[in-house]
Image (cartoon, rainbow, N blue to C red):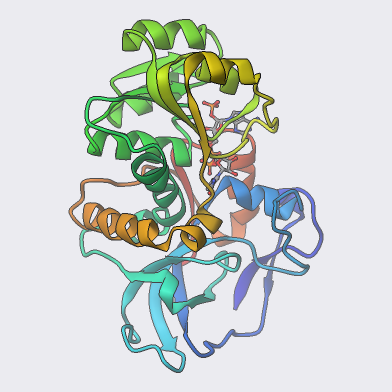
Length: 324
Ligand SMILES: NC(=O)c1ccc[n+]([C@@H]2O[C@H](COP(=O)([O-])OP(=O)(O)OC[C@H]3O[C@@H](n4cnc5c(N)ncnc54)[C@H](OP(=O)(O)O)[C@@H]3O)[C@@H](O)[C@H]2O)c1
């Protein structure tokens, strides 16, 4: 089978499209004929060997996909060949075939296409846990989303709207802000040109109840300063490349709660909340109430260009590699 392979850590352009042996499903696993796989910012970090969890060389990057079940391993009874499925894995999605833990796979709703299903798992689960379980967003809360036109950001806009919150989407150019408005944001701020703290306070009449931050860098402290007393700041990631250092006097003065959400470990520590959120989110997806926005698609042969698109801050919503 053809796959996008990382044989040495580095840039997206160091990836090679090459032939690999056919994988097989072991006990508790499912072999999938991949139709689409979505790119996440962490894929760029994994290929550069800058991710928290290193992937030993050589490996096939990619952590979410959709496709058809080709075979099931021993002990898997809820799936059968031909089922249209989507799911997440740690690596291996950017290939014609992939093996996934059957517990990480769900049947695709009839209403969703392969690209949307592939692009759903990582960003929507991240956004939903962050908003629903970590921040405890309530109807009419003001939620400020940084990097709001990116994968996690746009999912957070979509989910906030669905939870009945009001959303201020923060992004770096006019096209990204226009996309956020089309996707349901109530207000937007261009943080490349406007004062984030002042504009949030003006727009929300006193400050944010919740901040969702997948960006970090200088914007994080400005957003923290823009929370109202008793607000919640959820750190998701550091796409800017800079991990902010926050002065604790701000926390003291504002009575703000700073929390973190990491998809990889959330379910290990809170399997109850993970299971509840997952069920609710799949219902919303099946009903068509939340949907990822696919900003760009690339064939597997141009997989490196798909990762480059994300690395260069050009992604609008999700970038998808169409495999077949
Ligand atoms: N905690 C978790 O479990 C979890 C799960 C998934 C992702 N993440 C993390 O969340 C972050 C976002 O992931 P994503 O897949 O949504 O990425 P993405 O689609 O590329 O979006 C990232 C956004 O960050 C902003 N940004 C600011 N400075 C940037 C820079 N120097 N380079 C690239 N982007 C920059 C961009 O928005 P503007 O141009 O508008 O500033 C961009 O839209 C990443 O740090 C990722 O590792 C964490």
